Image (cartoon, rainbow, N blue to C red; front, side):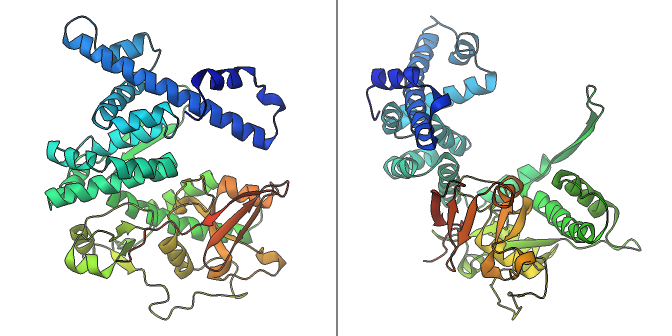
Length: 410
């Protein structure tokens, strides 16, 4: 911990958050995070002791104790138990929890990534503990969780060439649709459990229809529907139209894959994923070529003009594909909203002479799009996609690259 636990506790106890400025709030949050990490580390030790007592028949299972005495849900109790197992096999992470270098969320990311690995695969994962700890110390939970998933996937692939394919087939077999009516609100609900490929095809269709509806709404009189209502209408359009005379419309799926991986299979820094960042087995990509319209992402590779200047108000399909090749999420550094649910933002508003060029556009989710247009925040990007966010008070919030695709350089 950056400060002794007693000092941190006193800082948290004696600080009034209501009178802090922005920097003071940031500091206060860091102190709370440090204190929480220290408490989580102590809970790890208590869970370990409870497990030992339960093995001797002298106590209940740790999860039961966490639910009853820790006042947690069964899901939270299961997470705490998994946290203890990770810290037992990777003690460096328990030490890092104590000193606040990592959070419980980082440890939980390891538990989630390794839950389906067999003993040999998990042993190889644990062997990367030092590298993982450095990664966790320098990155937030979301980015670290992705690194853990990527590592587990590569280890599993080395041990079993069919592992990703088998996992996808399992997910396909478990896909289902559930419908019910909420008795309290009267709202009809539809829950779709879909494998990543099916989900991507569904949302590619929804995204296409939503773009068309937005264009129609912008030229029509009357109130503009909310983004949520627009998405619902797009889903209805995708389901009820498309392919007259019983002709099935072939779905369009954008896949980012480097040529070496497509030809030779797995290599260390290869990429094979949908435009929203879902990893796909190479064999699945090859198979999809028979079922869907595959758009290979090579920026301007087919001579498509990506800079539209003042000719068009909205981003073209080709431009959106190009942006998706560089980014999977909203451009805000703390946001993980998929690019599917983002607007394509003009750095200089089109209404004020801005151009619809690839270099002057970036995806923003609804809340962060609102921050820029109505909230007084500044957002600028350089030609090499380095973004700077500026608070309404003029202070720089964050500067860094927004190209969140993995490098495929050898």
